[in-house]
Image (cartoon, rainbow, N blue to C red; front, side, top):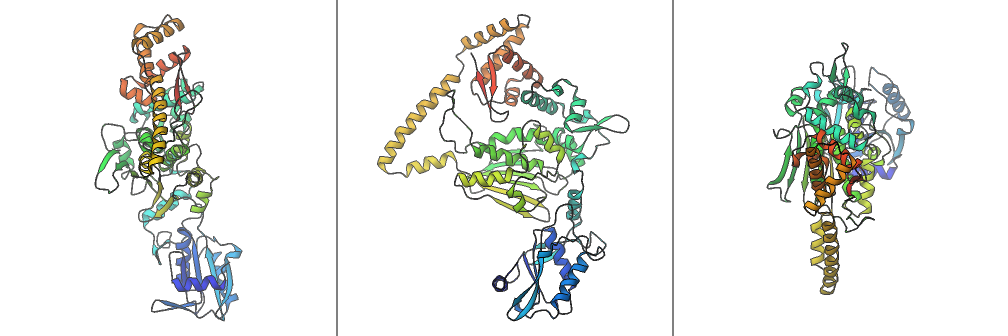
Length: 533
């Protein structure tokens, strides 16, 4: 509860986006409920009754009958004719003595998404308010509709696309996803079922009343083409931007409208997730196999942020998803506000995905599977590494959530080294040279040694299965040598670089693993290839 000293400090600062003063001379003012709605639909706030405004200054005048005023507030809060929901707890409405006068304080919490929009009167579109700076404003129809979508028990991505079939999706995107799914769960029964049944199983499609399998909105967003998706979601957009610190130009960009790729969120994730984490500082360490460890908690957390931006976006919103990378800073912005308070989101342990089917589609290939703890992990990891605390910002008209994080880059370490004194520079240079020698040794150990390696792989594959066609054996060896250049190369990289189809890559990998010349170690995302020849 607020004390007399707290209120004095609030009076000195005047009204803010979290504090509202009202006179309440003749009882509970009508504007009280507008502020109540605004705070409940935004981030919560405090309404103090018994304060007079004169020329921008506030003075305590008190209320005449505090007990009656408190009773009137409770009666109206529980009256659906007055306001749609009572979000108050008993301890949030109370009296405070200040300067010899009695004030009534109402602490309005942020409403749960199942209670929003909180509106005054009978008309949800005319009676819904939000807080902006020092005042309350009517919500737009778009903002009210977004709150109503979030209120529904079923998430918006379960909507069935009744005019589409599986043939309207991007078949290559489906094949790539199935390839990754099979790599993640090689023994799973779903790896052997037809595409339409597979999409139903993962929550991307379902049968209509006539038994025809049709994509749901989740399936369209995950596996559709940009044009097809945009026909349903006119404001759909994905944009990755990478540029220099001064903001004068972009040095790299991946956008959904680029006709060179599908434009759906699954392909977007895999096109940019390495870009998001590239140049982030990695201390030199070797694992038990003598390979350099190229990942830290920061890398994994950044990929989690990327997944969360895609999973929690309001795809019906007016703005698209923007991922922006600049020197020492990464920004993740998606349409839609948080579905819970910032405190609850940062506290973690509570999953409330805006798009439950999209969340499931990502989680099945081990992406974003820690929804509910992601933001909490970000804060603890950044504190552990001594980085500046991340920021989470909600903005309205249109609704957007932005997470901004500071990171340390490899270049930062080099700059720090240059600033060291002569003795330290000498020691640092020696250590750096030693590290470089070790790293080169590791790199040389994983490079292909020409035809000798290729022939060894061919012989091992032939010994495993003498009935394989010669061209299959040749391509298996080619894939092996391609991956051996860099143990971190992904399956999708192999598809794009070698020109093999996703299904062919899956076949060749199975042969190589069964022949015991190759295996994958570590997680599906962030693991590495282990070469046995």
